[in-house]
Image (cartoon, rainbow over all chains, first blue to last red; front, side, top):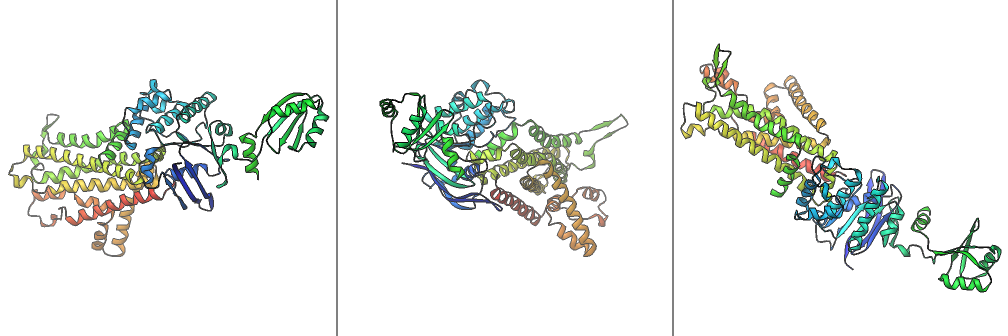
Length: 297
Length: 274
């Protein structure tokens, strides 16, 4: 598969503080990536380096096949980092025109992209009159102007109200559905879980994991169970080889699987033993649970 | 090059404050010179006509207009420092780089703009001087008209040099007001250093060294014309004679400073984490 961004042993030091330590990963075309990490784990610094605004200390990175200079490669990238930065005295249209001039894109793209983010009717309003949600949507329109090979979003829903968050997520989903590669940095796990197929997890500038979301922890998931015959159920689970750890909280029993098992077979088995369930849910660990397990280590 | 100039012009001309300042720095000297060339009747007592003094004769007019017009560069200096200051305060410098502008292109777009406006100003001044001169001057032979037009070149170099210094200060401190304060401090610092050298060493040597300092070297390109006007009135007073001409080495000094300031601005941006 065609690779879009390759990072090799990247290190960034701010004085004594090492913000990014020996980081390597590759972004392949067509996937949706999440960069996860607590605040201050080096997400924004890493993105800053590959986006030409922060100088690296050691290591290297290259865009696409490595034959284009970083600033020329960035013309094929769409990125918004932290807050939307535009000229407050210009209208949305004029701001986007400026971006077109930098990226070498035709002006007729402007209306098309403003339509996608729902700002077409406000295109002649000055940027300073926009609400934060509108500013963020304008930033997305600006990042989409060049029909980018990859869209980089750093905390795109930070500071937005629930409607704003919802609008931004819908827009991201639409873009992802069109097959655009996306790199989404966030500490909001449900955000990443909803859209990403791959994750890179950082803590204190070091990579803890990179790969598919569903392969992050080698687990077969777990059952959440309730039954009127609680003792019988617990005894059964403890004697069955397929189950490992069993957690009991109030009347909810959580049984972790050692090997794959589907809920239909399990239910049937219990029924034959005369145990009738009042509640049965089969689940995998959520990204949040997996993330906490990884970063707590 | 046109792309970068176009980019910066959009940033400047859509901003009301810089539009007004640009207007003031280009149109105001134009009008001041034009007005001073008119016949003014002072309350009916007498008519003041500066043209009668012979100051609008060729070739001295080139010297006079470029000297006075260069004071209006201060208005455009505010534009230059604020065009850097605004990029930092709006964080648009970061966005420009992310959008695919290189750091070199960023500095170049500012420098091209400086050069563009310096050239525009030089052209305006040469046109107005030319027409006023034609109107007042008693000699209109081409050889006299175009004598001393090197003052126009000096004016152009002076503007570019001064604005490059503003660009560098803007990049250095990132805030427009502080950058202007730095200009003022540099001016005072140059004179203090001059005073110290004159006191401890030798006044002639001090003057020579002083002429190498950034602001003084720009000033030296076009010396004050008053003494020269006085000289035309009293040609036999030898002690008034001074070297008012624009010399090649003066231009080279200022151009070297210009190159240094632009290069340092680029180095500063390259080393900086935004």
